[in-house]
Image (cartoon, rainbow, N blue to C red; front, side):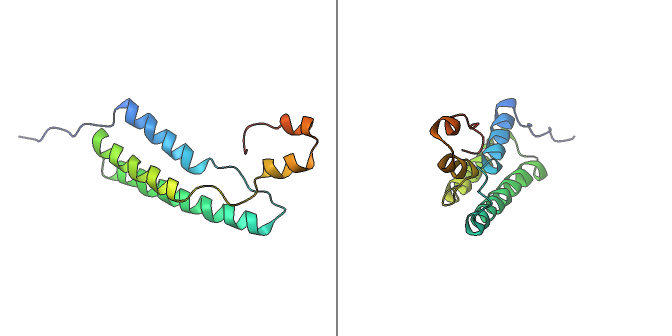
Length: 112
């Protein structure tokens, strides 16, 4: 007799996983005019991407069910919170400081 198949991820957990992945990698880009800021941005992004890869790999490789995947997502969110996307000047901040207030208000939300 074969064992019953493990339950798969439910839609809610799968969507939560995708949101966590997006949160992990969609950080505001740094200005390229300051090498220090850009290096810090690259280090933060690399660390966050590594955390995403670890969590997604665990979920997929181990074929986790929704309960175990939720635990992996809790770990991922804690890892992302421990490495916030702060400490560097973003491209939007750089442009906003150099543009008139009217033009700066028209900048898209992406990268702010």
